[in-house]
Image (cartoon, rainbow, N blue to C red; front, side, top):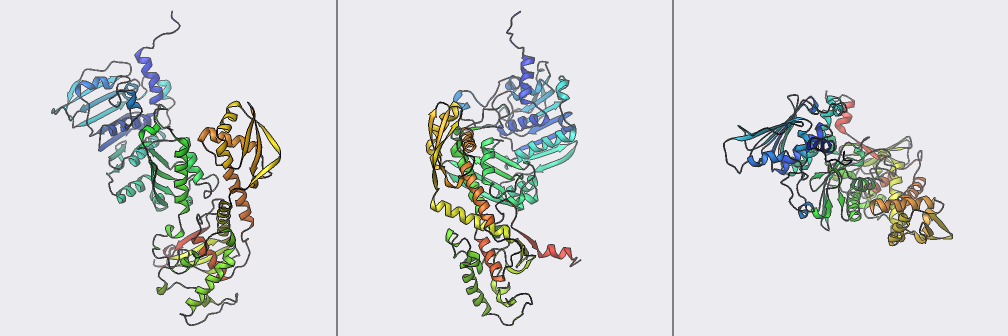
Length: 605
């Protein structure tokens, strides 16, 4: 007996099915992608018992020619590629030619199709059951397009059937596949039913409003209300979509949809870039929510690196990573309080004053110095238009000495005007639409932090030469990577040189990191270069140190502020990037609309 045997077709198909057909949801994914590749504009998915009893996918695509129906069930039979050049320039979703053969090997499959090209009155049907050969073609009444029915999944592989979860779990996984496709192809009418009950009926979405409506139906009303739109294009890359604000973070990474040329992916490089963009504004242990689309030349990305095609490989991974990070980082930085209060379309008065004082290292305490003078000038101007005086028994500042919201001022600034301080911790302010509550320490911590970062960027990265060079033992490949990235390491403030095949000598480090564990830092930085093509650990460590300094340099709880000081702090918040969160990701302010307050007191009921 030979030690090496050629596998028979039945066993080969079932092994392939182990890669492609993990559970009912993976079958739905393969069939939906085939429908999209066939040019379908309408797809109906019907499921029973979580997909174990029945899976039916019907589309109005181009259909399959009669002579190709038998080939469609053979392994490695595909209409998507014909040469190596096609494999390097993939525009379709499915191209391996394994899906239908693998599915039919572990289920009872029925394939019905009518090709538009043939122009006949009827379609054709072919069936296959497990290891049995496909049946003869049978004429059937069928509209243009294809219908695939799959019954009794894993009927001939009971061991694999045991690994399936409960019906509701399998249903939820199919629902997630439907959602991912619905967000990638707004032009397709997609319906989904489970046990004869309609779950989704998503109409085609062509306009921006209709696309937002679909995102709302898939991701929820709260997401679309708390999301900003992103659209950045540079050097052949385009990123667009919706990103949830940090205040809409999740306890699980369950609302993250990322697409590369329309293909849903879960890529480590992408996840790292997004996570880094949210680093300064997301609370520890929370996850961002987003629906993002990256478009680039198909030749710049390899989608053929994983059987399920969830992972991709970029030709220039460092450039793609930096593009994603930079685009999202800037988009989040540009979010202002007025963006989170869409009814405020005319920010007048105090906002223009706050912008008159640039955020530099020279005015890091501006809210009690320079902004005060600007604030008081505006105060005098406004007070000259008002009459009357009401004194406060608890303050030397008269209540008519700060701006009030009235018809003359329009909507006023986004965070309104301060009216009181609560327990020395919170600032209470009112704007045209309701009440704003500000955590004064958290808010000033963010302001101080951002100004210190600007100052550091302006002065450049200060370096310190080690009196005694530090020797770090590494693997040969790590030493080689470090040598190849010496220029990039130098930009991060690290001066290194090879000491031997498995050792480096560190001669210079960033001054801010004096006293840190430099040996571990070197290992982690090189590990990042190997994995992502870049490293943000130096900046991360610097930011952590600056954050700590900013925390200690900010106004503390229980410090009494005057109304002018409180108002100046609000104006600084409106002019500061990422002011909606402190350095640790906690919110700095919340807003309660008048109608919310009315409900608390049952007004109008």
